Length: 299
Image (cartoon, rainbow, N blue to C red; front, top):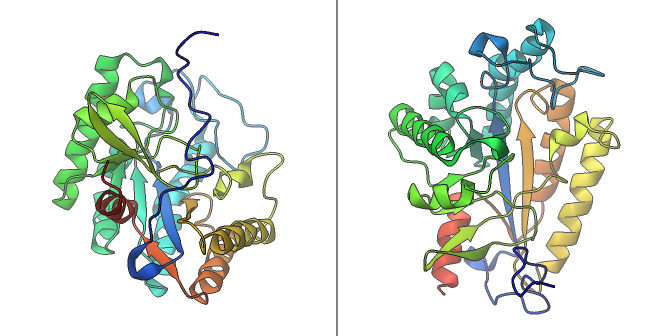
C-alpha cells in the first residue's frame, strides 16, 4: 500500500464533534432545489448530443439531433415546476438553497429573482448542467467565474457555496480560490466537515443522492410519491432519533422538472407537514449551516 491514499474512510468515527444546532435543535433539514433547465446538453447550444439524464422519458439515449420532447420535459421545470415548489415551501415558511446553473439562471431572470425574493440562497451549480470531469482547469474556472457573476448580477448578492455534481479533480480548489465558503460536492457523511486547502480549512456540507428526487428516474428508485414519502420519513426518523446524542443533518433534494409535478409535489408537502410537527427541527439554508458550524467548530 502507498503511504498516501487520496480517500478518507475514517471521518469522525466514534467521536462526532460536540456541536448543537441553534436553540438546541437536534436536526438540521436543508431543502435544496436544483435549477438546471436551459443549461442541459442541447444541439441548440452547440453540444454534440441532446440531454438524456434525469428525465421521465423511458429509454432515452443521447441523440445527435435535437430531442424536442426532452427539451419540453426540462421546459416544464422552468415554466411550472419551480413556481410550484416556491409556493409550497413559502406556504410552510421553509427556506431553501438553490443549486443553480449559471446559464439556466441567466435565461430565466424572473424566476431567479423569485428565488431571491423568497429568501432563498443561490449556490453555483456549474455554468452548464454538464459532466465537468473532463474539463480543463482553465475552462472550468471560466465557467465557475461566469456563474458567480450571473448570480450576483441577478440577485445583488454573492454566492457563498457551490455544488457541481459531476465534478472534476479541480472543482473544490477552484471553489476555494473563488472565495466560496463551502461546497457540497460530497456524499460521504451526515454532518459537515473540513478539508485542508493550502493551509486553510474549507468546509464541506455533504449532499445526498438518497433523499433526492433523482430516484424517480432510476431503477430501482421511487415509482410513486408514496415511495418518496416512505423513504424521506425513514431517513428523517433515524436522523431525528440520532440527533438526541450528536448533531445530524438531512438534505431534501428536489428538481423543478421532477418534484415540481403535482403528484410528486404532494410528497414534498406531506414531508414538510410531518417534519414540522416535530420539536427541535431547524429548517435552514446551507449557508446558515456553514456559518453556525464555523462558529461552533473553529479548527
